[in-house]
Length: 214
Image (spheres, rainbow, N blue to C red):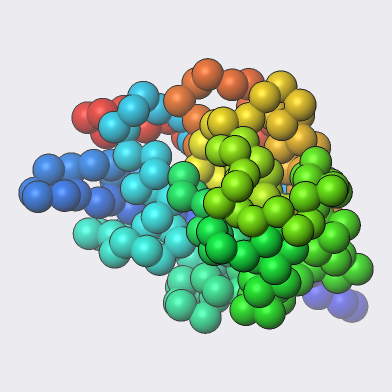
């Protein structure tokens, strides 16, 4: 007789998670999880704490209370570095390097997805022909696309995406949705913040709504 295999733990789970600033609650307590193959859509008005929540999950801010688990284990720095890719409002790119130099540099730091190369990621993100362009010469939308190319190269299974549709035209919005869909089909997961101006990506989705007084 063989034991029945246990269900895989969620890629990310939070219990009673809360954060305050200057003794004013920003969010929480929150309980949520996201499994492999699904997205968590985090909605809320400006000031509701969406960006702060992602920064806490990424380890850039310390929660006041609560527990975060990654792949069934208490979140530690090494787990975050292996499991999480974070796309924030700032591009996190070197302005005086070319697009290709930026991606090669980041792959050297963070590794890259199997069978994916920086030039291919640029093409997927709609930046074919911009390999030698300096980042400081790019528009806001092109910088966002370069950030998406960096995200696509990351081997991390959990994506934290803060307003990923901002500064993108309709084609760029469709690109984000295609990337998220492909990432989830490959066993990844994503947290996506939005203030409600855009539809959710067409994937299996949980919802988490933050309020200013949450």
